[in-house]
Length: 395
Image (tube, helix red, strand yellow):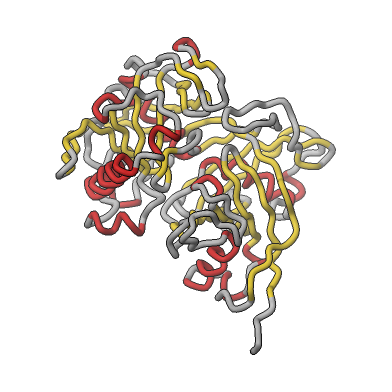
């Protein structure tokens, strides 16, 4: 009986923010995978180890969580004033699909570094020492991200003393600017697809909830923790071990997706797990983070917990942080009210692993709120580079 040999694909395994993913240059993928379609999806799923009915991804590079079941494809940009095109694929763990509907803000922190290391950024744009400005076209959502990557002796600097809650070891700081983060294309809606900063979201069989539904960074549905019966200080085990709670969140998310115009029927939510996100907010209060770190009310403006791919995230998705910063800057949203109300240009929120600060520049133009950019700092580090191997009959 003949057996297909394994094939090797050049790849790099990188931590970006509080996520990890397998990074590829488009030109290094097999020819049939250099364009979107089932072949590309099949290759990426096999690399990550999905679909896995055991939910462990033992036979792949995935780490059995939404934060570690990720892939990135980069190519030199053909767009004016951009260096690199960045495409993100969120690989489902136990199902056979790759969700291309949104960005990963955490892995965005690694895109500039990988682009420089991979020769995708013109050498003339990289200083011998200082900060390289990498202009990224985020192809999933058609937005621009500016990454400020530290450079030492002509090489990307990865080590440093910048600490990020949710990441054990310090590293070099990478500042990210998400330009014009409001998504006006997906679902045909504006920043607030319903036209309101707060709506009543009716969910048959579950209840009615006050909700801020926003397209910024990533489509996100914000709810009040108290309306859900939570304090806002929950850690992963309080949510992820409760099957009924997870099902309730998914039902709310599906109905919110319909209300936002992202899908036409709640049944479509099953094939669109990456977006929208669902999160709940609460005013500041003391709690103990998952690391044992004590968070005091003086440390934060509000508390936020967010769901990702059906589970409570261990920290905070970078794109959701953009949504938090944007919503906090706009008076009257649930995020803004939880933070004390009023106009603000930045917010520090508490998440399960600690705290994070994000800024946003918002202004009212002709009665509509506009946000020119959101800013936050993350870090990134290459963990392994070389080739990934997959059976040659995987696609």
